[in-house]
Length: 508
Image 1 (spheres, rainbow, N blue to C red):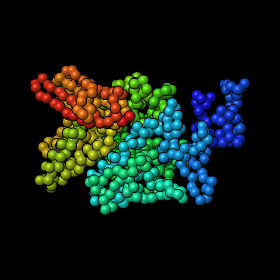
Image 2: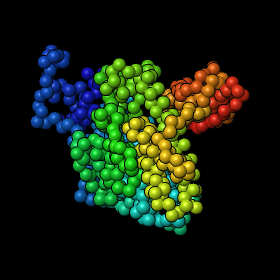
Image 3: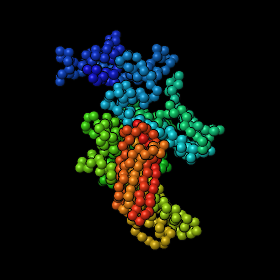
Image 4: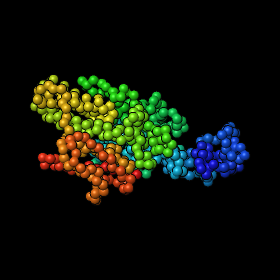
């Protein structure tokens, strides 16, 4: 049995140390009934009193001088009856909740986490934010203004010492992982100690000693907080539940909140929750969408056979994954166009008001237009979350801004399709991503992908297109991880030439 599926190794590994030492096969014979040495449909558990489950010493190597030395994070290897050290709690979890110990396992939560923004890249993102926005501040001042540790690496405040785990402040954690000059953040601040940076670790959302309970690790208190629902857990950082002044408001935006002078609304009757779309699991064995158990947080999951599973089809069974991707791409394209128009119009209204500061009505309209545009942008989904509300907010911002400049009241304008190239989604990706583009009028269109050397590696589109919004998929299965560029070249019938290039990142 253990040759096919080594259940002892993950469900009761220290059992091999019982009865003076046993093999994994002997453990199976000791704790589960057989008939003539074989498992049958009537096989049941036996000696459940002594079955060790996953107990304390499964994950902690307790030294013989326990009163002097503290246990270390280690996984008990039932095949060798010895401890294997674990670099971090996430690596420890990944032994059984991922492919670190058994490459062929169908439990791939750790693998999915590593591919996600929760599991990689966060430290470099924070370094970029620090060097761009927090120069001249000390780490302690940074976490008072914008507590990046609280969401990007909450468990980094736990430090293992010779006398056991100890808590440091969020400011100290920031100092541990990002460079400073004279104790302050500068424009040259970068990441340091990338090996130990935990990102959003398994233990950020799961109390390891009560993993089935919904919990959030609060880095300011060093303790776990119980959560009433999965959405409330997500909303700690993807909403304003922990940080009321945050500009990450997806949790709130789904409820149709935050706009001024725009009727609140929710899409799809408000039924989908965060996990409905971002942690869906199919019911078909062998698919990544069930093996990942939602921990890639992707709406569209690439399956082993190259097909794509979409969470959208759970509620819309007649919809294909391809059509769902096309709809999402069109929503993002519409949002990009409206947002671009809103930003230009709000900027024009701001400029107008500098010479008309006493017009109180227009000043009110400007505040409302700015607020509505900001709320739509701070959702950070590109118009996918609560799409109708995001469109209403941007149209309101456009109409009010144009009234400020022209003095003409109007209904929210329809925005004509323009030539455009949208940011690919998802990004980073592995190994497929969708590229959206729009054509203002009939044109000969070429969309291609290039590597960092400028060599063309794929031609995705090469044909005449009529006016409209389009999307195309790039499959990087046969290419190496890294930065790629994609471009569009559209020559309209009247001779106008539109060209644009954007960057994307593939991480395998």
